[in-house]
Image 1: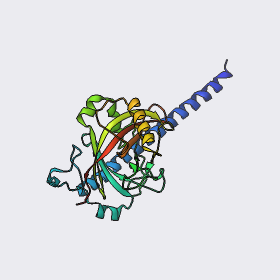
Image 2: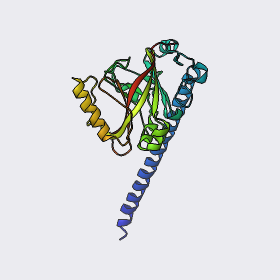
Image 3: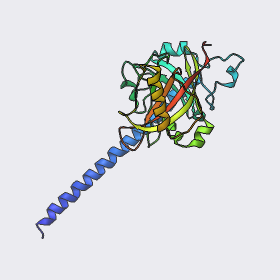
Length: 260
């Protein structure tokens, strides 16, 4: 019996060491996450201070005129941040973020618009899409994190019809013009199961896609969408599995075609 005590103590100390190591590692990760969240918010706020939308997702009241004027002055911003291609706002101001585009779909998963490393990343346009959002379907990706943060976390609120009734559209600002992005479908999908089609072979193929999206949607909307419409699909991850995504499909309706 006495011979087993040293072994038991060794196992106990080993268990305590592993437990403490995991606790320190988890604490460090959480600290880094909170620091990244603070830095991401501070950087986003610095951009908003130059050009921002109000909490409704509409242009700030001071910019509203009979003829819509884009509230984002892209020229100076793109001089500093060439990857900036759009600004997206909606969900009552919960989403109010620049959209970047890189040569691949990896860089902005872990970088802010200024190129600094940050676990929250920056929402980005698919690298294969046109910056003008002129494709049949454009894709924007952004993070959602259970521990907090993630510019696209509010997208998951579209499982609630009441949330959709309050915020049925986003506003997309681009150097080429501004758009109202009307939500017409929202649903979870496996990453490899969603049809990431940028250009459809025919109107019939696009109509089949629209019918499929409508059938899978957890929302029922009366937004009319035809094969002639341009689609903006917003995508974020969920907490259930690594390959499960939540997508919000919107129809782009031009607000204005001239920049301020």
